[in-house]
Length: 265
Image (cartoon, rainbow, N blue to C red; front, top):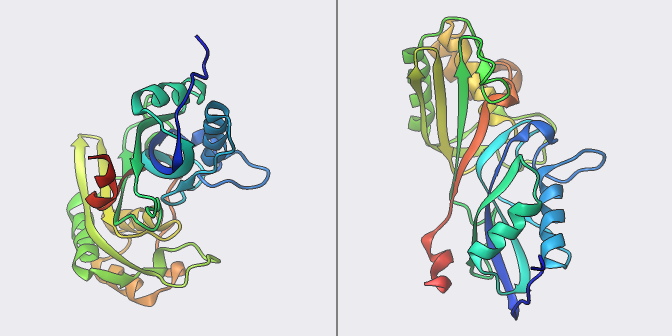
């Protein structure tokens, strides 16, 4: 049976993909010169199967080494694509560390980045050396006070819309540093493992890793809760903590309005 079965042509349609990837082998999501990206590999796979040039647009960047359980991207095609059939075809040519879990048609004006209403991340930490977590969690063996870190996380939620330039990478093209954080909390998974979960309408470059690094300073009591508030008010990246390793960070979900899917009802 040929990999390329007969297909039905239709008017130009827009499709959403939900993508999982292990980011260790890639220099982030976005295509760039002289470095392999998830987006480049994905575009090549879709173009090969659909036999037309395909360019995906992602919901946002992830940095080098960051993972995703729920990255979203859109692309356009004149083909009427059956979800189950084309999920199988796309995944057949993608490498072992990238998979597509959902393919769905959306309204023509829906945009993977600009139509999103919420993005969610998780950052995983383990405190005892574990070879099975290497590359998927950050080893931090120092004793930490999780209650203190949760108090700091609550400050983020209470602030609602806020300028978070203190947690942003420098030399970005941002015209605004305002973000609205809906949820932020630490949860102990087991005795030596914990996870930080955070959701917001948008994130700045490097924001989650800088927040985690600053909260670890609070958890080890090298920074106080009062200082945390002062750091945010300063809008100065130099005042915040270090950016923790990319290996523990996962983009877990991107949320969209329900009406973008109505044409498929």
